[in-house]
Amino acid sequence: MNKLRQGLRNPLTPFVVFGLLTLVWHLGLVIVDADEIFYGSILGQQSLVKFLIEHYQTWSSRTVIETLFCVFSTLPRWVWRLADSAVVLGLALALGRLLRGQNAPDSRENWLLAFLLWLYPWWYLSTAGWVVTTLNYLWPLAGLCLGFLALDGWGGRWGIAAAILGMVCAVNMEQTMVLAILLLACWGGWRVFHKLPLPRLFFAEAALALAGLAYMLACPGSAMRTENEIVSYYKDFGMQSFLSKVEAGVSGALGEMFLDRNLLYALFLMILAAVVWQVSRNWLYRAAALVPLAVELSLGLLFRHYKDLVPALRDAVAAARGVGTVHVSNCNQLTAWIPFLLLCGCFALVCGCAYIALGHTPEAFAALAVLLSGFATRAAIGFTPAAAVSGERTGFLFAIAAAVCGVLVGRRLRLEKLWQKVLAAVILLPLLSVQFISLWEI
Image 1 (cartoon, rainbow, N blue to C red):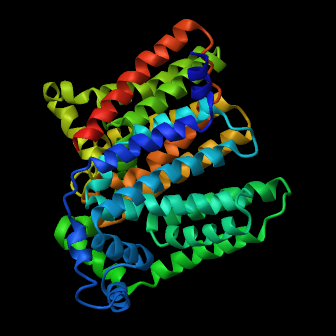
Image 2 (cartoon, helix red, strand yellow):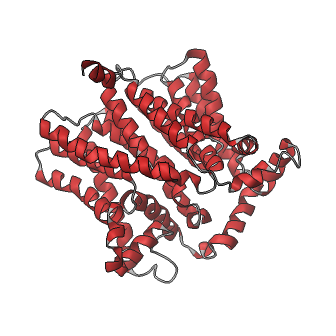
């Protein structure tokens, strides 16, 4: 029993368990090709360089990402299964190292990170094909983490080389590029405010992020792709006002947090409420912490069991999860904005409760910077016609940001009494089991 306890308290044990589970469900996946069919045929028809040049002119600025598309869509699928398992585990290890900073490894914190990452609905990254979708969303985020690890002093020269390669991949995907710019601005601003020097690597990574932005804006294919998506998926996009696009993006992002059956967000909001109840004796703050959780449980996790009893609420939730409840015919009606305002109010409570839980500390700044930056990457989708078709996969960065925020808040959670430990186990074990069954069945 003592050896078991020592093993569970080893800081690497959570990542070993998470890595093994990740490998198991990768090896068991039934892969049905989607976009891989197109990219897998490229190398047999023309040179890769010619294809990338033509695609930049007619479709996309994701030159680096599409190189990976073509290569991995051609290789046997077992190569992707192993490589993607390694990237998922690498992302967990990188996040754990970044969250730890200069502190000693903490097994409890690593377990919480592993739990939160495990509860992400990974099947969202199969909506355009497992290979292409993971390469487009997961791998650039892992590259961005390499960039910040090097800024934190990890890896020496090899770490810097890995950071540069990772950032090149990260800034070639629009959402990750936005996240990189926002987080670098927050990191650099924090150091300037506290009169700390900025390393040369910071300027190199910032230059790469801005170069990625310029490369995207200069892409002639982006405009053609936008027009194609408008015709194919969202014919009313050109008639949407600026505020309507804001509402669509924000509602889409917050709908994933409060109106979806997403176990990661459910656990995050539970942790947030529990910590606020522990650190504050103010009953107003305690009540405020329960509101987002109550909304997520009633309109997200459990909503499918009674949604047909309230058709009006069902339709409003479906609209908010799609392209918003505001459109051309009702944008002047106050009632059309009610779901948007309620979602914004819940998110404001989440941010406020995170600040209450962490206090006026560097951790609070980091948690809010990461959470709001992740939110911005998803909300920006409202300004593209992809809002009508991209679906849940575009919320991947926001979900991982919530997981990071959850770990930072979870540091303050104290499970000292037996009933607290039993309650935590009663909540966690069913969630983890349901997630394992769900991943095993896909």
